[in-house]
Image (tube, rainbow, N blue to C red; front, side):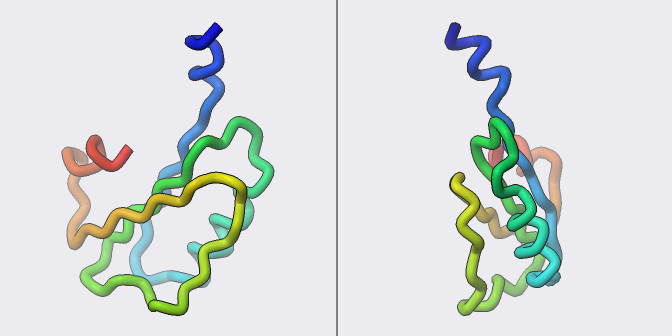
Length: 79
């Protein structure tokens, strides 16, 4: 039973670079997605997001990872 349940959990990974308005819009559209467990945003920019950036409430955790370059090896640790 537990294995079947785990197969239906979904994680969405979004790679972004300084496009906060587009990112917030994309994350907002995930609200209500069946079986969504977590959203991982990989912030691929040397500058962090603006302090006043408001993450939408979509009912699941939004984890933001800050990196200055994209590496597939780093990606394994993010998820």
